[in-house]
Image 1 (cartoon, one colour):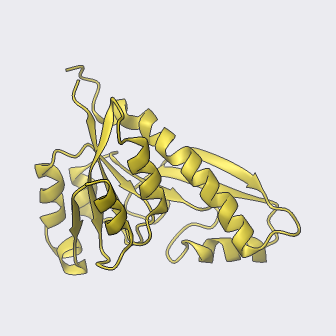
Image 2 (cartoon, rainbow, N blue to C red):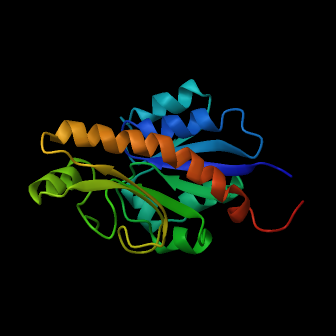
Length: 197
């Protein structure tokens, strides 16, 4: 059976993308074939380069008003789109082209602290301000609304009284790096379809 082809969309540094690229570097069932970003300065481009994975930078216009990104993904026969710190809403054209094949990771236990503008430090600051005793990560399918797609996996960590923004950020990141590649691995056969080649 051919490998499941993964494309990663990221907007920033790409530490999750790095873990995914490492995980699938010599994987028998899946491979990262493309990294896409909306930010020409994103460090994720350098990370992809280190793994000799092709990259594509797109503009807002190209992403929302054309089918350019869909065409690129279809040409490369991508099976699974992974959002790893990608901050734009996914347009209908992409959702239609890849039904139940787009997943995202979010730094809270959804449905808490999700929605527009809730990403990165914004989430952690809200969690601290509300005096939550736990937080965590949610890996979910992507639909037309921010952070509302079906949950695939959640993992939690405790928030101690002495925790700061930096310490809960670190706890969350450790969970992301630990769980995201494995959850993707678990989805490989599903997104490839149930046809055994």
